[in-house]
Image (cartoon, rainbow, N blue to C red; front, side):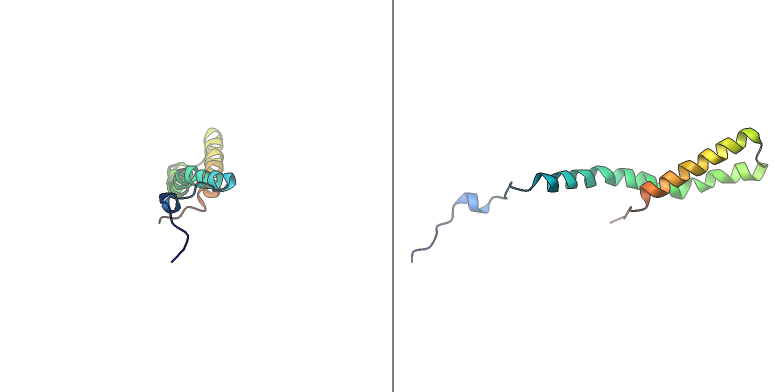
Length: 85
C-alpha cells in the first residue's frame, strides 16, 4: 500500500493565519475588559444621580450632573456589547 506518509509536522498547528485575523483577535481580547468596565459603570453611575437630585441642583452641581450624564452616555456606548460568557 503506497500512500503519502505523514510526518510529525502534519500534526502541528498551522501558523499561516492571516495577520488581519491575529490583529482582530488581539483587538477583541484587549477590548473585552474595556467593555466590562463600561457595562458595569453604566449600571452603577445612575446611583450617583440620586444624591445630586435629592438636594436639588445648584449652578456648580449642574455642571457635575451634566458631566455625570456625559460619562454615563460614554459608558453606555463602550459597554453595550459586553456579554458575560
